[in-house]
Image 1 (spheres, rainbow, N blue to C red):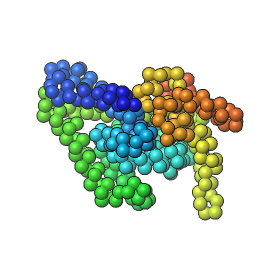
Image 2: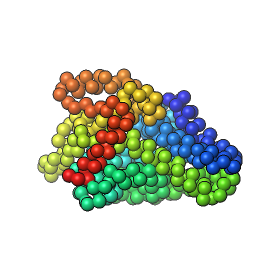
Image 3: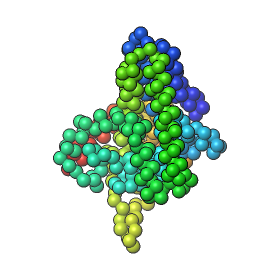
Image 4: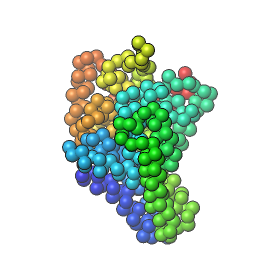
Length: 326
C-alpha cells in the first residue's frame, strides 16, 4: 500500500510540478499530456489509496487511515460527504432507488428500472458518457455543498461528529485551497495562456471522471443486477433479502485476471468481495474471490463476473440502452 501510494501521488504531483515550473510551456502536446497524467493520477489516488483509507482498511492504525483519507481534500473532495454517500448509503442500500445515491443521479440518467423513465432516456446510452466525464468536475465544485445540506436534513452528519456550519466552512476552505493550487498557480507560472490552463484542468477532470465512472458503473448497473425495492412491513421498510445476499445479487466483478488493472484501481474489479468485506484491504481480494464464488455456488446464489474490462463496459452500455427503452 505504501508503494502504491507513492506511485499514485507521483503520477499526480510530478506532472503538476513539471507544469508549474514551465516544462511544456513551449509544447502544447506535452502541456496537455501532463494534465492527462494528472487525471490518471487523480483516479489512482481515489481508487487505490483514498478509498481504502476511508474504509479504514489502509492500515491497522486508525490514525494512519484518518491521515491518508484526507488525501481526498487535496484532490478537491470532502471526506465527510464521501463517507456518507459511499460507506453509509451505497454499501448499505446498494442499487436501491431513493437510498443509494450512486444510482440516484440527475434526471437525465436512469440507472434503475425502479426510477421514472422519460423519452430522452432512450438516448442515454449515447450521452451518458459525457456526464461521466464531468462527474468529478461537478463533485469538486457544487456536489459537496448540496450533499452536506441534504445530509443535515436527514441527520446523517451526527455520526460524522460535524455540524452543518463546520462542514460548510471546511468545504469552502478546502475548495479555495484546491482551486488556488490547481488553477491559479498554473495560470501564473506554467507559461501558457489562461485558457489553455483551463482546458488542461478540464481535460484532467474529463479523464478522471470518465475512468472512475467506467470502473464503478459496470459493477452495479448491468442487466444481472437485482435492483430490489424494500418491502413495507409494520410501517417500516425492510430489505427483501439479507444484506449479504442483496450485495451479491446487485454487484458484479470484472477482469479478475487483469492484474495490472486490478493493481491500479485498488481491486475494485473485485466489487463483490469489496461489498461483502469492506473492512478488508483490497490487496487480499484476489485470494478471497475464489472462496466467495465457491460459497455462492454452494448456496445457489448468483456470482456475476465479466471476464474482461471491455466486456463489462459493453454490458453496462447495453443496460443503459435497455433502461431507456423498457
